Amino acid sequence: MSYSAEKSLEHSLATISLESSNDNKLNDGICEIESQQKTYVITEEYGNIKDENGQKVKVTKYTLVNRQNLFVEIINYGATVVSCWVPNAQGELEDVLLGFDSIDDYKFNNLYSIGSTLGRVTDYISYGVFKNEKGDMNELSKNRGCHHFNGGVKGFDKVMWDGYVSGNDLILTYSSKDGEEGYPGTFQTRITFCLTCKNELIIDYVGMTSKSTPVNITSNMFFNLAGHNTGESELINHSIMVNANEYVAIKIPERRPVGSLKYVQHTCLDLRVPRSLKKAFPLVPGFGYNHTFKLFKGGERKAFNLAASLLHKQSGRILDIYTDMPCVCVNTAQEFPEYGKMSYKEEVMKVTEIATPNAKFGINENDQQASSISDEYRSKSDLDSILLEDEQEDEYDMGIPLSKPVLNIQDTLPIVGKSNVVYSKHSGICIRPQLFPDALAHKSFNDITLKPSNLYSQRTIYKFGVIMST
Image (tube, rainbow, N blue to C red; front, side, top):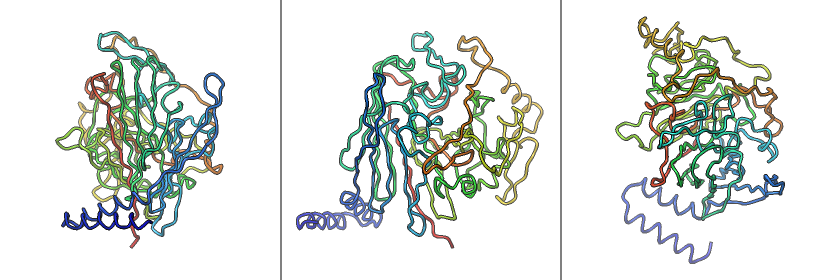
């Protein structure tokens, strides 16, 4: 460090010391100054892909590194986070993010959009249609049976983004053309990735449109805090907390929302206090989570607060997720193919057991008990309403004729990830902040339509830490 830089640093610290009597403010100030000295971004080539015209396009990898040597790697294909190296309680680094080794794997083998950005709209748009402002039906591409899912055939996870480094931030931009995947309007979006000296990965999403269009963007990262290669045997040693009083009721087999919210109290979806996945999985239909929760926001609908926490006690790693989004989707890789020895085997479950979790936690986490139906739905009238809700289809309200839903059947080939590790069911967990799923089909959910006069904005923070075992 030069003499002038040293003097500048000393002057800044002195100013902070005089102006702040609060130790936290002082530490924040020191951290901010030191991050300018220690946080940086490395740019390198990641390979090539061919565009629609058969021309080679260079893919770039950006590595964000902070002063604790925590680093995150991101590529501009699909705005994909490919790795996240985090220290454990002993300071040993491990990659805690599921992913692949090459651009070819991400382009041809990433059927589940692992690590990628989803958009324009995450999750379902039922039957691939929605009404525009004029009342006309707008038809989208259909890539999950007769439904539109995670942005369509070629969503944001399958396109090249433009990238550049600004200071210590990585900025990725993409212009989605009018009519792309059936969406109206040209949608300009920008994602800013920032790694702080507090071990926070901050992701800011901003977007504008030329015509009214639905928007619901998020990042589809699957974590395993024991290491990406440890699989189900270590995922079940995690504990999870979700700051939510309600969950989105769904219908099977597609797991599409029915348009209503249910309370988590007395169900296996009550994750308001930390729950061990090892003890929770046997109580959840399907042995694992693939559910969307409505976050508790207090009086402010777009309040920025803690959404969820994930802890792996053996390594000491902890992940806190903060967001201004109203919902979070928790998915323990339920759709990944099952390979090898599984701790939990799939069973045939009734529709009502899927929509209404059929187990509850006891007063003590170690005292868990199963029941035929949760305490919320003990009465016959409540049970009848659940059965009706699961069986009825509400698309008549949109003027859409009902048809038997058909899911795309994909070959259940193994997911071969980094270092030839096979990712199977329960290999990782995705905690995905987002707007309400399938909101265009349900007036009870907040509208996700962005108008040309408005700005789409969203922030999510992934904060990594360690706890010292006692």
